[in-house]
Length: 69
Image 1 (tube, rainbow, N blue to C red):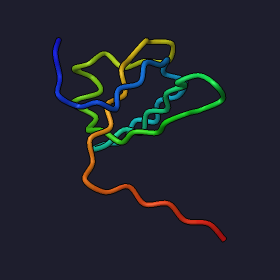
Image 2: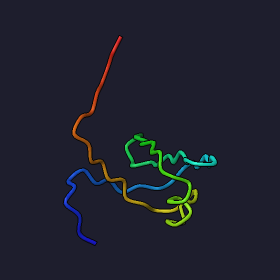
Image 3: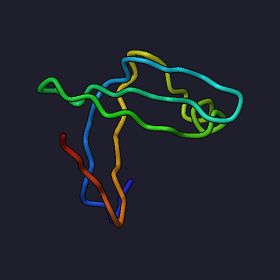
């Protein structure tokens, strides 16, 4: 598979919270870093997302916001 996005991280699914419409997927990308993704529950099922599965996290955004106290 080729993709134009440049922010691609490999990781392992550590948690899946399935809802009626969306599912929250936590992916450990190493170094103590975990990325949380919200995808449709149908997409999670189609991809076979499950705890322990190796996945690619692809970040494609025009804006990323950060805040501190």
